[in-house]
Length: 544
Image (cartoon, rainbow, N blue to C red; front, top):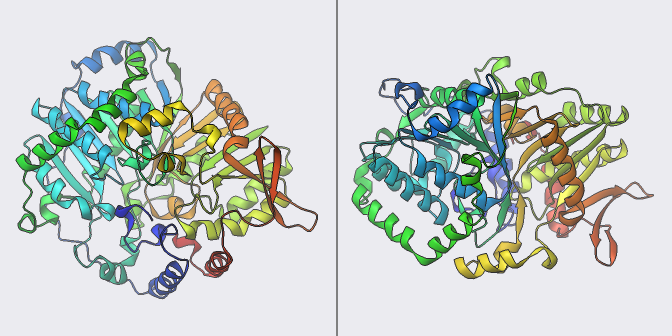
């Protein structure tokens, strides 16, 4: 991908932005041959660690607890929620939660970059640790290579612990480890959760990187988080504890040799302080705080909707391919989600329904349920391989009444408003970078009843390989709002796929001049089309 942290030889993470299709084809052919070769585990030897749990530290007298506890008492066994669509509100919520935490911060992420956003959050985390907050940072090791020195330095703080999940043993020979231990390495902890004082939790699709918060020079991910209080927070904390105490979670100091790096805690703190005091960072913070969205929410000026909600999550045993059926997130989702009567909207960055999913969507469409799927177009998709396997299903889905929409790779000039111009000017981000977009959200709305938000993509990787977490919110107002938002925005941000008289796919785009119809896949060259077609024939869909 264009992201430097995802240059590993991971099946799900091959670049289509800067490399030709030939590279993924060759890599996939190689990987295909290797799928059956992984026999010996390279997992490092684990030094036993004492178990740690969120409830080991009493957070009942914290400021957040004093705000949340009365609300929980008024709404027993319910969950209060606040959806974060806007990336500036999403980063503001995280920064405010770090600032307001007094006892604990439990943070679990697939990606954490040493960029503007990642460094800003780390600066705030150190401040929290300095005032006595116990910080547990759990990161999947697949993208941790460039952050090793930072994690080691952070771990030197008395109040900060850093663990790497499912680590590589051959730190400098990762491609080789992929060859000899592909079965394990190909499974990753994709969870994203953020818990402050065991009182407020954030889950969704956003990692800690520039791309997720409108501050990348290359392209921006369109994503969704949800802030939760009440019953669901306990479930998310329990899930975090499961992963933190799992045998695949290694203290960074056991994995990374400190002799390889010169960076130490005091040096890191100095670097992060200089970064934080920079004018562009301060300008960005000012812009993110302008709405006062978090403070309004926290002070109950914004009325929370308290509803029944169910946290759905994979067991860490899934990484070992040993999770029971009921410990899989897709099993839990099927159990908790009601059957649609009128409509189902699916938003998924990576959408590969496989045969069973295809049949289910078609079945719903034939029962007069409106089924709409929004995913990335070829150019907007940062993983060409996923697009190849998604494309296999398009024509049959369209034939049978399923509506397909594909996200534009760039925002139109009409949508680049004054706020974008101000952001570009004050943070020194190019307008061109702000205009480029890629869908990263994972969201589903069923009738005017339920909404799913989480890290789970509707593809075989999320279903079978990676671990994920999400929440099913039983809220008619939210479901209705999601449907209406999709109604209002599909024409602005997505192609509509239709079949012509010859049963070929066309791409329709709404413009001020009317509907423009393309007969060829937008932004795809002939050799890319050939490469994608070839990839789709390979027997590797279940390993994506």
